[in-house]
Image (cartoon, rainbow, N blue to C red; front, top):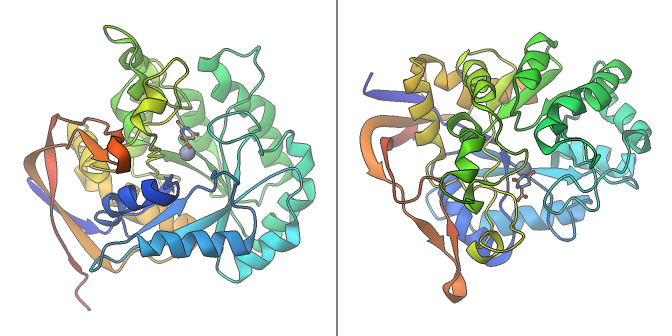
Length: 352
Ligand code: DOR
Ligand code: ZN
């Protein structure tokens, strides 16, 4: 297969930031994705309906003319989150979901939940109204090895959470381990997982290849090869509870190339093309549409996009970086490398 037309995909986990960074990154996502779940880990975090509406307007202002792109906003769960505010935002169609960061787990997570028990009333309400919870699934206990934090999270948090709130829609975000794949595969339709393209493409060796590679550092951190293989199997399986979420997380170059660098890989520039490469390598291009365009909307109770995107086996060189004002830049995942797939067209789905 040298050409593939699919319903326009969506990105179910994305960081867009704000200000000049927002303006620089939005066009790259909007050219390939119809919608994206936008992470709320700004400073200060997006916690209210008013903040989400204002942020959404700033995102829409950054979408280039001629492109249709819908940001789906999320609320940042804190110890003090008001269930009424969340419910109001969900019922008015402002909030699509709520994001749970364990406090201290990752970038801008200081306002996150200190303990899941703090959110009992909020989770009960979300379960009742069908509002999805998106979970950064890593424990923050410093005694737990960084490579084990996701697997330990399943035992300590995810299993009890599912037992207490069996009907709550939960997305186990950016899964990186065989344990998480096994857990989600065995779960019922209320549990799903997103998988990033970088976790499908790199294992932990990439962080240390010939020296320390700050642009390969993200959270959850890339794991051993056996885990990458489990992720590739899950993503390409066509199973409804796995779908696309890039976790594309831009940081200015100087904040990564430093003594204590930020976590995050910027993959938005060629994300769908790289997912296509993975599915092609696995002989599973026929399942790309389910993973990228159908499973996510079905889980969120939305219709698939009404446009299509066509991918072609046509090599392209990924630009090395995306420029920011003042001589700064964001370094692209696979920047400067040739990759085998390109976007060759977009169209409306013909009416039946
Ligand atoms: O690598 C990451 N970067 N992981 C996260 O969970 C957050 C993200 C960011 O916001 O930079
Ligand atoms: Zn993220």
